Structure formats: structure tokens, C-alpha cells
Image 1 (cartoon, rainbow, N blue to C red):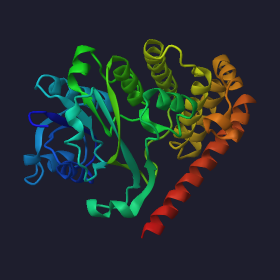
Image 2 (image 1 turned 60 degrees about the horizontal axis):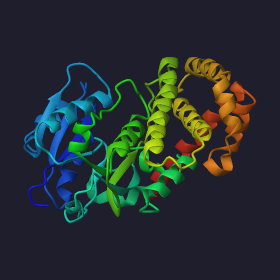
Image 3 (image 1 turned 180 degrees about the horizontal axis):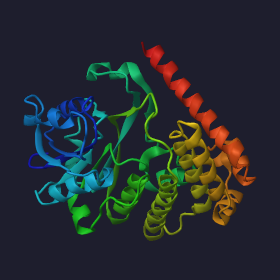
Length: 357
């Protein structure tokens, strides 16, 4: 591990409550990592946290955006800086997440292009790193060490096999990113991590799955009460996972041409996931009717209907009720069902938090 330089990229926006915890968690790893933070024009006290006496010495580079540019652009700004500073690897850490005490130094000596570690999901109602174990609600285990097997499992159940849905809990070789011009797509509001992962997978020559838990991802207990559903954002989400599917297809066609993947079924799974995500932004009567009109237009799409003909919820792990309603273009019933699912999720998370206390 001697001489290997690793950068930790933290893109943040209004993260004054959790940023210090994230930054301090980097010291829990058994090797040195340089921290690069991009503040995407925060309006809270994030800047003050970064410039504070206890946090500032821990950070190698801070980039302040004067206008809000989004998480993809923020990460790209950090990648651009890292690429000029002779780093060997980079990894991503969300500002509300943190690393776990992990021994990674020996693992990273084998020189792979990509290392993917396991992670856990936690609720967000704790402040000290020592408390995280009381709030673990899920473990994202890697069930195989074979890339082909994991790709096949992901294609069948993308919402149950989250290995490629995030950019964190992994180490990317910087030279592969530079040589192949791999960046996050600034036009994607969602699924940009999926797109980035598969473009990197297409370029890499060696990938290792490490069965060690490295990362704690924080799941928000409450949905936003200020962000409302906007048709433009919802439409952008649909186009985003189409981009992600295109990157996945390019990877499998070049690296695993004999692997059979039901892309129509995968589209259907992403479509269902995006509807649930959009429903979480419905917080008023007016936003519900905007969501309803948007859903009606999407259900009229010929591609959506053709895709759901090929969709088997028993294989993909989706919800049979939503699949039935989509196939029958029952927009109003579908929207009500999505809000019901939202209610159940929030009640479950609240119950888990109360149990943790």
C-alpha cells in the first residue's frame, strides 16, 4: 500500500448536520486517504463547517460552487481535480453517510481497476459514529465474486441487487477514468451512478468483489416536505434510466455478448422504481394532480406498454399490484397505490427508529 494515493470525494449540499461525521469517519480506515469536498452552493452552515478549525485540517481540497449545479457536476469537479494530482484511486462518500472501521490496506495492494465492498443501510437518527449499529436496518451483501453472475442477478432484480445502483463503497482506478473519459452525466437527475458504473465496467480490465463491510448508507427517516413533484423532473428521471440502460447494454454487448438480458423487463422495473420515487415528492393536493397528469401521459407510451408485456414481477421482485395497474393504464388507482406504499414505508421506518430507541 506504500505510495498508493487515494482520494475520497464528498459532494455536498446543505449538509452541515452530517458533514463533520462523514469527514471524521475517513480516519477509521487503516490507510491514509485525502479528502476532496465540493460544496454545491449550500445555503446552510456547510461552508462554516468546512472552514472550522476541527474539520478544515482534515480536508485536502475544498471546491466551492457559486451556483447550484447538481451532484453529478459536483462529483465531476472533484474528479477533474483528482485527475491532475497523480492519485491512484478515488472513492465517493456521501455527506450524510460514513465509513465503518475497516482494514482495506492489504486488499488494495493487488492493483485491480475496481474494488467493490459491501455496505449497510442505517436510519438517520444518530449523531455519533459509535451509535450506528443500533440503527442498521439492512445489509447489502455481495452474494458472489463472479462479475457475470452478479450482472445476471442485477438484470433480473435491480431493486433487490443494489451492487450497481450506487457509486459509493468502491474504489475506482483514476487512470481508467482519465484514459476513457468517464464522467457523471450532468443531464441525469437520477440513475447517474448506474450509468457511471457501467461505463467504468466497460473500460476496466479487472474487478474484485470484497466481502467486507466498508460503508454505512443513511436512509432518510422523513421525506422532504418542501420539494414537490415536477413533471420536468419526473420526465428527466425516465430518460435517466434509459441512459443507464444504454450504458449497461454497451457493457454487456462488449464484455458478455452471450449473456441474455431482458431489457424490456429491466425498463419495467426501473419505471416502477421511478414512480415510487416520484410519489415521495407528492406533498399536497396540487402536486398530486400534477403527478396524476404526468403518470397518465407515461402510461399512454407504447414502449411502456410493450415493456410491461414482458415484465414478470415474480422474477424481477416488483409489486404485482402496480404492474397490473400499469398494464391496464389505471393512472388514478396507480397514483393512489404509490402514495399508499409511501405511507407504509414511512410508517415502517418510523417504527424501526422507535425500536432502536
